[in-house]
Image (cartoon, rainbow, N blue to C red; front, side, top):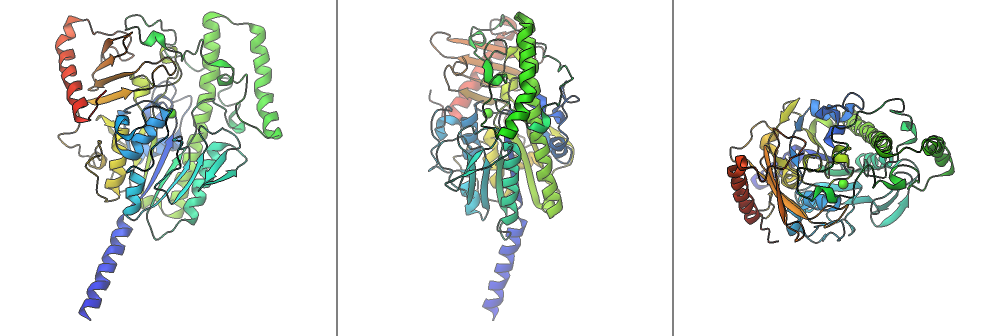
Length: 490
Ligand code: CA
């Protein structure tokens, strides 16, 4: 009898423990610059507000300095899954296929009793592993009528991809095993190029002139030869499909008519104007930024739909909502679109977290955190063991308002895709105030150093300025230390 009771007690305790494990909803976008998420402020906040995303910050915490370890799509996704730098998880560039046999957070969460799912963009080529359910775009996917590889089967959908990814994520939530906590990765294609807005947003921002960044016309003087080698210029590198002279999606005839009726007459007007030089760049910028912001708007609306589902289903209280993107993006700063550089706009990625009862609503945090920390954060939230070979650190103490005294004071960055959009291999370190970048290619073989307080737009490298010699020496030492700590050999 006594044995039976204690068994029942144990069972009750384990059920209780399972109940206490919170659900984790990870909403992840592709190429979302913090300057286009209104909770982060800035000149676009009033013009293109993101109220639903802002709600996560209002009811949770906003990280001002979430820095990626390698600012490009597939590598960032691999870092999130593994909690390891690119050189250890093997996904150095967009080119390779992710080794799904390795340890990942979803696999460990599954072991800890979670039901795991991913819906949306995967972008890692190999078949997803560690998920009870996967429903993913093939490669980059398209903005309209996506095909989703659904547990190995190709399923075609009709509609706008950002809406459909949300529909499918909600569908999975409704039919999930409610006996288990869930870990759901809802991952959008948006706002990755080529920026095809939803039909309902074609006219949004139509009558507004979006303010230009102060560095839209940048001639890259005052820095090394590296930034001038770019091929991501709004002036010269956008091509017809990024500017909607050619469409990327395979539309239905009805969709095509509405889409083309919007862009074709405007393109004809533009061609007659025959704009040159700065006027042409300015036109490209307006065309680009408006479509980008329209894609963000659909993301925001769909985040709102997910938050509403959590409210209506009663799940909100015991669900941690995490919003982030695989990296930042250039919204015209330095004349660029795309990402990759260790400079501020592509190094920063948004990070908003809501965890009712644990995070003080409306918090902001200025610590250096990273996508390297996500895997361990998921595991820590779940009460699961964090493997010693992961290289980040759980954010849960920070979420609860207490930054550990020995939190990182410098962040290591390493970009490997040589020549992609003209960006050379580089690595470096930043402590948030100063930044040191090394371009090791034989042709460049150079350094850059920025004082972010006096030069937040990174227009002048102070590498040769004797005033900074001591700082540079200090950061070089830190760079060597971090490379050793993270086991970087190249
Ligand atoms: Ca990306």
